[in-house]
Length: 112
Length: 111
Image: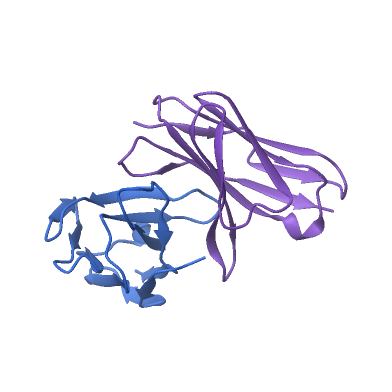
């Protein structure tokens, strides 16, 4: 199946640094979602975006729905060790389906 | 908070066995989904259901079937388990057009 282009694939950063990752698609989406998955667990929803241009925050996390509807980014400010995990973007390609297309994931490692 | 509960966190079965994975959600969501997750392949949709007794094939339905007799419960069935079905299985639910919420996953090993 189709996957979204998500970058970077992995990041190794020091505690306190800011993090930025993004997802791009060749087609437009109605919804963009960001999930975090820790080892052995299911993905947990972080932020949901439903309108082009929308900017939404959840604590230290901020995500934006790109104005072209073909991309989205996630920022994490002042990273802490518990931010470690794999971050996935997901997009809903049309209003006719509730199926999602998933990104390939960004593995984040935070060093104290 | 949405709660999606998968019946087992870890399961070990033998080749040829019929395997049932159960998923229950407590938010009255219309949609339910089954995925498998493998390293390097990401999340792949097996089946989804948009209503009781309704189902639709995902990207990789071969070797699997599903059952949705009640709105809150969605079962994934491996008719005759094979070693290539060893994987992490994830259930999710959503209310259209909302986000999908996932369970903790079942790590299934077929020996």
